[in-house]
Amino acid sequence: MANKSRERWLLQQAGKIDPLLQVGIIEDSEVPDFILRSTDRSIGVEVTEYFAAPVAGRPQQEIQSRKNAVVRRAWEHYLGLGGPAAYVRVCFQSPETLDRKRCDALVAPIAHVVLLHAAGLKWPQSSIAILDGLPAGVASIRVGPSLDGRDQLWHAEQSGWVGEVKAGDVQRVIDRKNKSAAKAKSRCDELWLLICYDWSSGGELVEVRDSVLRSASSGAFNSAFDRVLWLEPQKPRLLKLFPREPGRQKWYREERNV
Image 1 (spheres, rainbow, N blue to C red):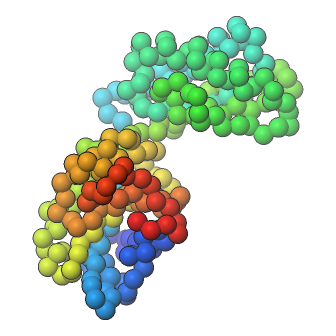
Image 2: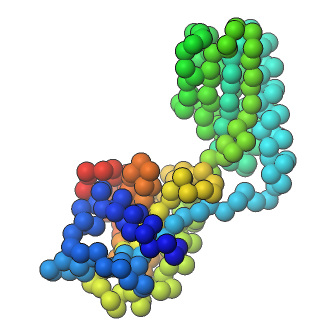
Image 3: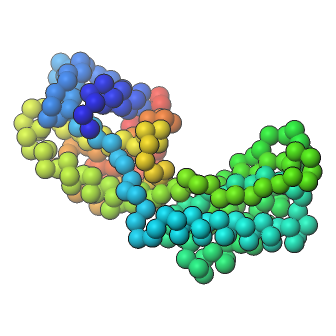
């Protein structure tokens, strides 16, 4: 990550949540990326962005074909139930959920979820996003009323994968940055690692899974840094990954102390 102005912006977003990142003067550095100096301490901060790896193991064409097939069959099932005409978009979570057996199991639940929400929709009402009560493997369903009561279309989101950030993914980032930690630590009193995931910067859409929270709560992460934070700047929200604190780890948002 070489764009210093972007690194500084990410650090500032984290500072909106964690007051310790607001204290003192921010000095540009190389190793670490920044040093925050106050009268009684200096905190070095290494900033890195998280980009999910592309979906591997299956050709994207095959994955998209399976998504399309599930949605088409769910549409047919829905029509068989007598559902009203609607515009429907289905967003799936990950390719691992779309083996043949799982595809079969998704058809009826998707149809029933849409039926539950589409029945009362009338043009010109806005479409609604369904995020709860969905079958495992489905991230969201958007349902909109038909323009004339007859026109309708169902489709699978072309870029709709919501990937998973697992504990092992986070540990790999920490391991990579651990290599330069010793040199960085010689220049400050404390050394922090800020891992940033910004969905607007491109790459795969991802969400942090419970395994990350469990690993943070149990102290399972191995880090040469004094503190490791995960930042999602668009929300903004912050998750403390290391060191372990009592109780279950939780998200912190703006104007709340870490």
